[in-house]
Image 1 (spheres, rainbow, N blue to C red):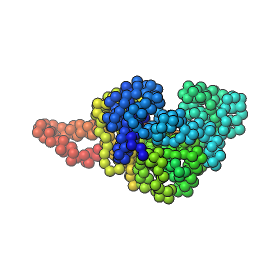
Image 2 (cartoon, rainbow, N blue to C red; image 1 turned 90 degrees about the vertical axis):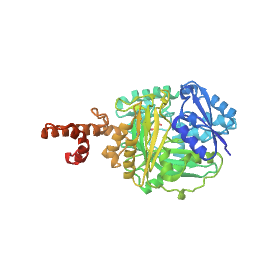
Image 3 (cartoon, protein in one colour; image 1 turned 180 degrees about the vertical axis):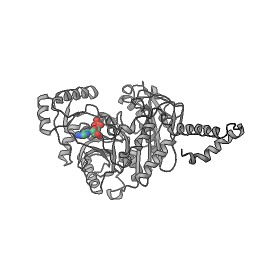
Image 4 (cartoon, rainbow, N blue to C red; image 1 turned 45 degrees about the vertical axis):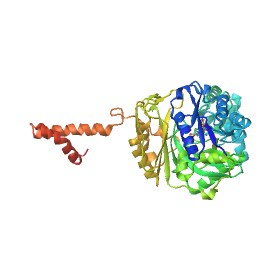
Length: 502
Ligand code: ADP
């Protein structure tokens, strides 16, 4: 049984994994780069080791150094978190070779699902619906034009090795095909060192809905229902919720079965996510599988009542799943928002710097997965996400109201954050009504623009203006107001707020 876990990651996810380890009585080993010397995950770990300079290629991506620390510290397992080495088949293989348990799937599953063309082929073989398109890489530009005409415009050109929206191009006109294919290929080459691209029919009004799965080493696979992730900016998720507001029990059951079949097709063990693209008529198509823990996993944990990290560790220990599909239920509604150190009022410019003050929201149904503290300097080398705020409510309405309240209680100074932007998203009618797809952000720009003149403090400005109006009125009625009475006018102001209709 695993007794000591090295967490090969940083930030909120490293802390989150260590929390579950601590509850299981498992010791933790942290690793850190130069920029992360004083990071929370270093303080939280039972022991922590320096692994190299700040750029991740010289630290968090150095398999040799991480394995060396694992051996030196006596860790019997490595949890990769998300990002970095989490979907690196060679790292999973190397851990196996060195006799260290990789808390994640085996190299075969990572490799098959990591290459989108290979994944599409295995899904077709497993009868899981995929977006209509090609199953071979496109190298010949003339051939690309022919194939695209056959599929019918618009189409998506996508990098087989793709991730994070890179190497992806939407093509609407025939005259743009060649440029788009060439651009996607060179972007893919630069980002992933592999220029293989393929073509998919563009799904109009798409919803991004993904299913969480868990598989053990004995062939049992269950799904833990869906997460709706259609609120995206530049193909990156901003808000996630479960259940999906558009889901029906019938489609949920069918998609859940397809997700389980997808995982079984690659003998998957561990926690994984099957992403689907869903159209307005609830036709669904396999998009890709993420063979790791997702950023948005806490909403599933809250609604299904399962600690996914503990499950990952149990599976890595070779234990069979303790529950069957029929034991799992969704209860209530959960929403997650990602808080970034960025200036959402200024073209989402990253805002690294020192956190001067932080007050995290508390209260019933609120979970805060973060790692920042007062005096902490957010490094410029990594993803600028500071934390994730997750709320739960009995209903979607309650969850939204709770999220608004929690965001209002969340104060961070020293760096700019995406909190004002998230406030605005929660006010958009299409979000409130649960009628949104992946075009939500571009279609609702009128609600999402910064309120320039009062920078998110409109209520205060309105109250102060009204107070001075009130004083002016008082002065007009009683030209010589004695100072004593003027002092008590704050009290009056409070009492007369409703009369003044602020
Ligand atoms: P990546 O791995 O780079 O994130 P995905 O395949 O997961 O790429 O796609 C990211 C997002 O791009 C999806 O959530 C969806 O919004 C959009 N997208 C991808 N493929 C299609 C498609 N065929 N039609 C419409 N939108 C798509």
